View 1: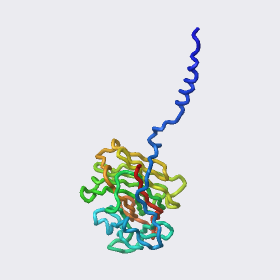
View 2: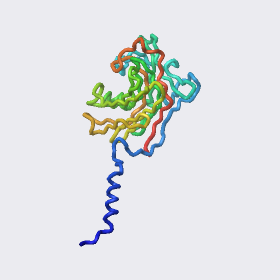
View 3: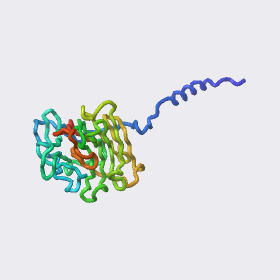
View 4: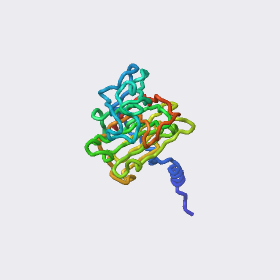
Length: 275
């Protein structure tokens, strides 16, 4: 009879331990990069103050300018539509009023020509408005949009929201071959809660070979180049846009139940690069 190998039982124990150790390769639980803050706006200042012109500029006008979706608002740069609230927040406010031939006003601000970045983490802490026909968004657009056009420029919708569905937000990317209604999209819902009740953190982490979407640091969508039916165009600088649209083909018309004025309240916007 052969003698027992004294190393046999420790080896069995080691194999059992390895079998039950959770894997770190789960794509929905990725390793956290070492982020360095490179750009931010905390929206500190007195109530009524206009946004920092060194950080933001405006889109002004209507869908006739070429970037509408049959929306009903006129975007302005007025204090009534975009200003600080004096408590560290920015208010982007939609109002029911006739202006520029439209029945509503609102604002659409952007960092185009002031700040653009390739890759990194883009995040904003936001409290939503609500009501049918209200359409706030936090998104990125390729900085070459004016030369190559859309959707070749690429678009990353970090957060879109239909006011009639206050417990849901949507993240989408658009590019050549997957734009408009064919964009690559996923929704995130709150259970027994609404996005207009309190602030939530919306973020995208974007690298050479993936785009990941988060709500309150919960990863719920990852897109890679091989997932797309068309060209991956997310390898160049993008700029930030924040806006509140009224009506349009994504949300439909406001109703008598939609209160006005309505504000998207933004606590901060921050951008990071991986060290």
